[in-house]
View (cartoon, rainbow, N blue to C red):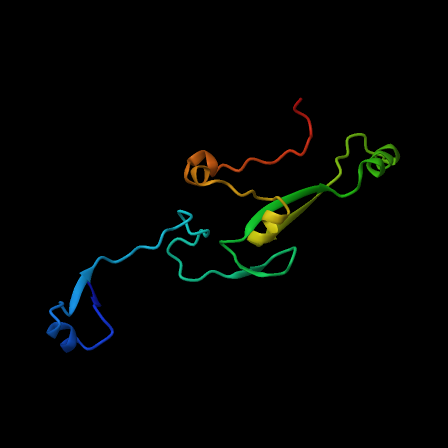
Length: 139
């Protein structure tokens, strides 16, 4: 039950003028853009900070956008040379695994994540991560 003063003057002046001194107003709830407020910290008061790999900004660990980058240690032409010079017939080259941590602005700028409209943000199929293909394959 919230009470709000009617005018900037004293309560006595307001009641003399015939107005009620206070009147009840319902608590107003701010609109929320996302169901989780852009974080996944449910129930925790504070989370550790991590640094963005692009701009080195401090980002809460639960808010940061995290992606694994899997690359070959050597490029394709060098890999072919190594395969020909190798003694072993079935030797697989090890891969390089990097965990990339982005702040929201760098992730949007680098197209790691995309801006989605309100309907897609709310629906369950909008929460499924679809990896973008930039002109590779498919037609």
